[in-house]
Length: 254
Image (cartoon, rainbow, N blue to C red):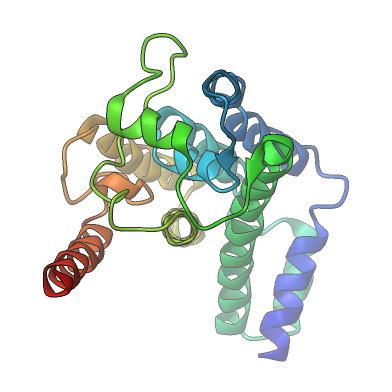
């Protein structure tokens, strides 16, 4: 494990002064704030603040934003399988398995840092006009349940299935977990294919998989984008159970 951690730490060290890393996080920040101006205008026009986590939930539920953020993450892993000349010195000091495990740990933690950074950007941007309570805000409710800003502010989101049964904190956790899981899966896929073949093959496979997700669009297909709250079947089942429990509890209290 010590060798694996050393490989991971060394790989994080390559971020220092890296133009690619800086660009990836700039893309992340830009994507996180892409619709934020309109979302902020809508909240101010309504006269009520947003929940501090709702912008991140919105971003994770909006295909074009989630896609742009994903592309920024893949830019971060563009040099996979991370076999530049200086990286090979770490391979000499550990076994091949330890080296691979260390790189996979790097991919997982990089995904966590990337999406937590996105969450932090939205929290900081909206903090002057947001609250931290674990309840949905009136503007977001109007936006989701009544499509109030679809035409006037050019922002739409459709979490109608989960909003009545899940709190903002839990929805934000689901969004972060799905982002992390999908990013790690794609980053690991890119790493392992590139490790056994050419980088062109890895990006070709990943591009084909991602293109299939985009073509799936709003349909609930097995390969549909898994970090989207509305299109994840596992989350659907969890929310359905929670909703049924809430209904059952309400009936018993009557």
